[in-house]
Image (cartoon, rainbow, N blue to C red; front, side):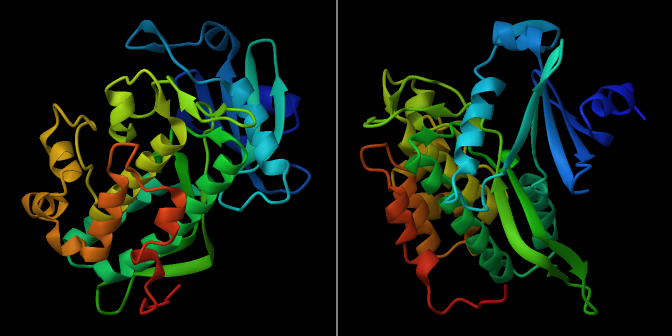
Length: 326
């Protein structure tokens, strides 16, 4: 067992800690909460890096926007409200030591990005029916919408929506007697949006205008890519949500970055040629007219981009003929 698990964690009441990953400013751990014996997640940020708003990458110090203190305030505010949906990872506690800050959260499950990758590996081998996968994607996407809609209702924007920052619980894969892969429900299917380290509270009566250029490159809106003087942060979250849906449905990224001027794939999609691009990507059998219509509504410049309400009312999410397997 690591020195962190055997010494530091015991000093604040958590044992059996296992490191999950390194982050730009520290590490993330899983442990047991003594009072409930439930799994929890501990995000640790080094104070010296936090003070400098910096991280060490490739041996060099670089500036970053993440802030565990503001993340703690925002997550506590969001999840202490009785109206908070299950689709947001819950705040539990916050500690600080001489060297670091520690944010304690519920364990939301496994990374959705990795699950999506695994599913598409099986789809390529014709071991999973695309229609079955799309039924499951629809359930998860509705919960993702729920999380963002609630976050925005609290005058907060996430700024870092991605499959890497969404967790999944309640579903597994298993081989059937016909050697196909099936989805096995082991509880309530539940996604949880996490990592509010880049999130921003805009206050009451805000127009949500921002010049905070951040987020993962693939998920950034054209306004961030072009470094527009001011962009709508809510609309940027919606664009990122659309990228997440694209990756879930097709198993690939739509572009290198959302630059209408410099990225040919982005230009094609925003010019209404998504169907043609899917043929180039050899993913035409993965979509249908309703999916293409929804993504085309989202992948617009912000003045024409679909809102959360538009997405909720789209035909793909409201198809009465869906096979309700889950």
